[in-house]
Structure formats: C-alpha cells, structure tokens
Length: 250
Image 1 (tube, helix red, strand yellow):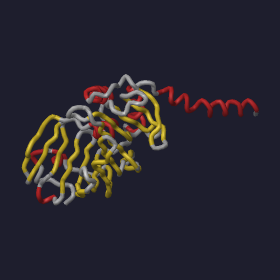
Image 2: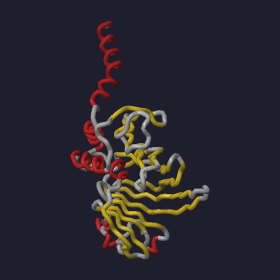
Image 3: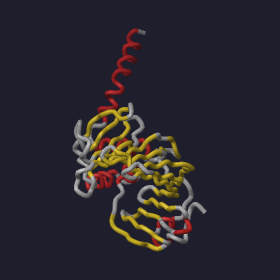
C-alpha cells in the first residue's frame, strides 16, 4: 500500500511537468493545438456582432455586423442595414470591400486573428508555421507567462517585451487569447487584441468579447451573440462575385 501511494504521489507531482515538457517549441505548440481540436473544431460558424468604436475623446459609435465564418480561410462581414450591400470579405488570403453592393477594392491580406483564433486548427501544421513566420512572429521565442490569472504560452517576445509581434495561447485549453504588435505605419504604437470570455461552441470555442487597444487605450470592442457552429452555408457566400445574391441571415 505504501508503495502504491508513493507511486500515485509521484505521478501527481510529475504530471504537470511532463505535460509542460512536451511543448518546447512553437512547432510543438501548434501540434498540441491541432491534436486537441483538429478533429472536433467547427468548420463553419455564424454570429451577430455589436461593434463599438471609440474616438480620441471617448465618444462611442455602435454598429451591428452579421458575420459568417468558414474554417479555414474565409470570413464574411455584412454591415447593417444588410440591404445597403456594404461589408468586407476575407477569403483566399485577400480582403475585399463592398459599398452599395459593388466591390470597391481588393488586395492581398492574411488576417492574423483568423489564423490564430480559428484556422490554426484546420490548416496543415507546416502551412501554419510558414504563415506565422510571414506575419513576422519570431517563432524561435517560446516562453511561459500568466494572463488574466491563467497560465499561457507566449510566442514571439521575451519577458517584459510588450511591443514586438507576439501571440499568447492559454496553456490548459490551447486557444488564442492575446496578440500584440507594432502598428504598420511607423511602428511607434503598440496594437493589442484580446479574445475574452470564451465559451464552448461546436467542438471548439469562441470568444464572445474581443477588445482592440492602441497603446493601452481601447479603440474598439466586439460583443458576439447568436453564436452557432457547423451551420450549413452556401459556398457562394464567400465568393466576391456573389456578394449581393447570397446571404446567410435572411
């Protein structure tokens, strides 16, 4: 009996260390995330988003967006009123903007929040790694920290550096919680994104609160409602040429 108790105690003491030892590199982290959710994470999702923008004086502008997600790679955002035909489409590593039902512009664009929050579970691991490198995250840096009282992995920046491109992953649930990086204009300001208040959804998770800050000051918040996973969506929904003819929320 004494031997059995000793073994049990040893297992309890060593278990966390053994788990932590498995993740030593960013490649290990991506692999662990995919192993945990690769088979269960939802392929599609829809939700309604309350968007609050804050100007420099703290004044608020509130709008409602309808969003449809196809994992990996596509996100459609329809601004209200829907009948006006305004919105944004992310697909095929491009961003398309629409005004009055017509395509206004398009350009190459990889959405880092789509990669970190959703696509990371469904894309081939090698493609994830190459995409993260292209987004200028230093994948050679992986450390542990805490965020909102929970243990996290931090990729891209050393302790005390809250300006370099970096993303934070919850250690227990292995979902994305935070990203920081310098602004694209001159690199002087620090932009931060937080995914908060996660809830389980369709074999995965979704954060119904998203906060964007610049140099610590909140500039935009997003609140999600009516979240649904594995919704049957017409593939044309994510085709720019079908912007005004196919909708999910009618």
